[in-house]
Length: 232
Image 1 (cartoon, rainbow, N blue to C red):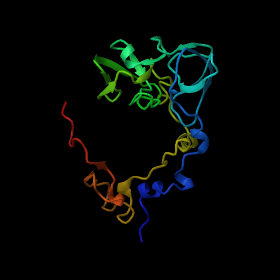
Image 2: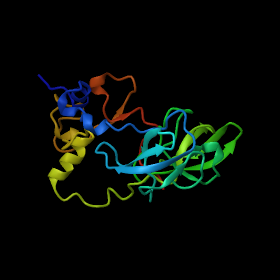
Image 3: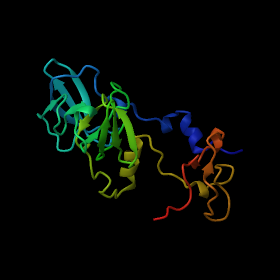
């Protein structure tokens, strides 16, 4: 009798594949009523995020956490509605070509896009109530001009450039984010353990899977937009 495949085992939510509670204790986002000026009182290295987190305190005692912009420092003043690096503003109030991150998908949702370390998006154009933003994936996204974002580039750039020399260090990095590691190649498994299994050597079967496939077979490329080798 075969075992459950990795996707099924992770979906159960057992302690083996569960994110540590400590990794998600810090909540990042913009409160709904933001105004005035805030001061950076602390930079936090969170195990569950790829970028440092800035703790911000306002003059009225309001406190919230946001992803730190590149070159942000403790004691720096952050303006709501400003246009300098680290400031939080609506997309409609910023110039075309401005780099932004931690972008809201809908106004007042707290930020949904471009939250990884070292990433940034660029405002391409604005037309009436909508703005066109170029994401790091080179895809364009149309958003409301009232969506808020942080000006600048997210801190933590170059985090993957330093080589990981020991397996133990890699283990703890992946464990903090509940990533599966070490990962066994699917084509190296038996047929009973994975849909890509069996066969002598790594003769890879088709990885194209229908979107309405059963959970046990929903592996590989799920309803891909395109297939085949890219032509230069």
